[in-house]
Length: 118
Image (cartoon, rainbow, N blue to C red; front, side, top):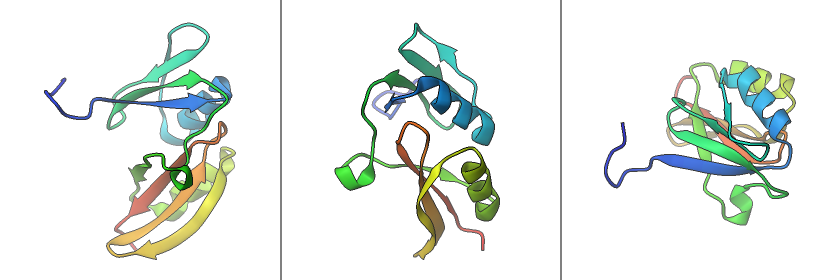
């Protein structure tokens, strides 16, 4: 359902669309719909969005917004992310309210995963 003046969609660049799709499918169970050779979309994942082919990547240290996933088992999610080929940018660390880690998926985009469960 589209809600007036609420965040509705997010787009990320992807150097390797196939590797990015495979990563998110394996780790988070996402499915994609391709719109030509240079764009793929996902839906029903907390927010709808897509990846467009580009030689760029999103990184919080360069001012990009950071998408943060929630996990009931942070260590298990970290293991899945590593097994699927992500680069761990920040290992699990504590912050007020929980713990989290940051990773880069195969196209280099930074994401984080947090939990309030010890």
